[in-house]
Length: 292
Image (cartoon, rainbow, N blue to C red):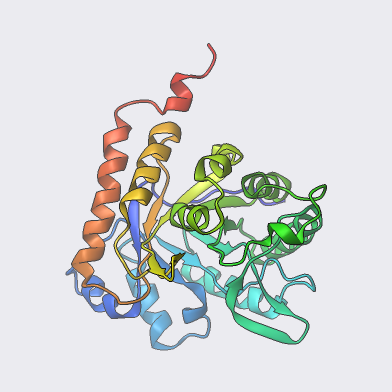
């Protein structure tokens, strides 16, 4: 079994998208670390060449959107092998993927579809995660997603597992790590009425190896995880409290739509870094409250 670990620095980076590559490669912008979407670089060409050049300047994390860890009929092994080949070329500091499914039989959906959190789902996903890690020869970080359908009604209450407990059980069973997306937790809390505090209470902080922050949009009274805005105040507050309680984690600013100038991304990353720096001088609350 793989054991989760990364070589990401416990500092704030940003998602690197194609329009921002020139600024980075020409020395006009420097990030502490960057993350890219794996699927954009699977098959070589100029895009992968640019990624390999960018890797010289800072650590790179590979973040997948197409592995389908929740697919009941198993992984697309060829897809996972392509990501493994990319990882061998890039030597990333971390490899991550989403807790979702994207295929049922022959039907494939280009989206992150939510799963019911049940014992049956846990068994299925754990088997897929273990297989993926064996192919990758690396541990995965698995990210909680934003959902727009409340799947709790689909699960027999006797089989249901709360989201935070599900993530922790998956990490402990497979050795994967948790990529904790605080924006997604906040979006779900507003959309489905599950408090962020109740989810975080069930997540073992020792399993959390990375944090994502992003901006959301509001449509018809529902929050949408669009990654098209600066991080909102409630999410900054959650992040500040989490770092105060549990200590520094590698932190990424995600921005995928309506891309801003690269300097705006740097400012968002610097704001996260300021929170990390402010709490670095004092032990985390969990350490201060630990029994002697």
